[in-house]
Amino acid sequence: MGAVAAMQRNDAAQAAPGAQPARLRVEEVSLRYRTPEGGTFSALEKVSFEVPDQQFAVIVGPSGCGKSSLLYLTAGLAEPTEGDIYVGGQRVEGPGADRGMVFQSYTLFPWLTVRENIEFGLKRRGLPAAERREIVDYYLDEVGLARFAGNYPKQLSGGMMQRVAIARALANDPQILLMDEPFGALDSQTRMQMQKLLLRVWDHSKKTVVFVTHDIDEAILLGDRVYVMGARPGRIKRILDVPIERPRSLDMVMDRGFIDMKREILGLLHDDLEEAH
Ligand code: ADP
Image 1 (cartoon, rainbow, N blue to C red):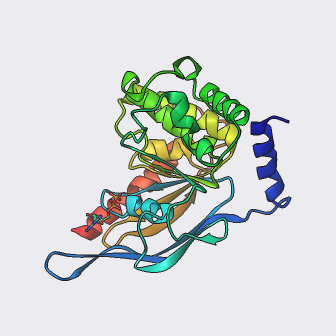
Image 2 (cartoon, rainbow, N blue to C red; image 1 turned 90 degrees about the vertical axis):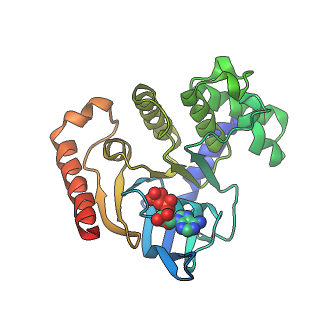
């Protein structure tokens, strides 16, 4: 059995038949910042939710509602003021390879080739060269970059760099993939290509994903569930299941179910704006 097949089989073996264990559990998480005036600003207030295993969860909300903060806390890059976060039952106490991250700004190592970037975490974990090669080849193929394996990041377009970032995150076989506006800096054509690519790659990997966006179309297109946040203080206002079957395609934005859901989310976001004024 190849390295990739072994990895996928191992994942399947961990889930009890029929059971849907929560891969991510956020428990009563609050995050407060000190203001220059000596007071505190509440970025997140008692946020609680669970993301089941193998779910594609999308967080939407107005700018400043704490979406990025929530991902940073889950990544272990910051600590909540109160509350706890669990990934695969383990309390988050700092950054770890069990959480893969893809951010909006390109975070590739500029001095490494595409192959070396994807291989980076595998090397650190001490995987033998043949196994590393097999895993990297698989993900290069998944994101359509086999021909660019020897290129350096500066020789790639923005979309290609994000494809490398996705391949690198998945190659490490994380428990959960955290994506913070990963397509936010791309032009609309490239963004659509990337959404299509992510739908396909996710369908193969079935990783638990938490994806942050402020683009409602993107949220519905990609997600199994949409977590709508409100601001001041940052909180989850509503959790909506996306009632649209997979495989999804970009032209489903015309479907009735899609439009109804978009209207509902827009209503929730609009209420939040009204409350703020
Ligand atoms: P979003 O991703 O939804 O736009 P963020 O998580 O980036 O929101 O920010 C949530 C709120 O916390 C914002 O109002 C932001 O200004 C504030 N904030 C973020 N980081 C800091 C910080 N280091 N110090 C003070 N306030 C911060």
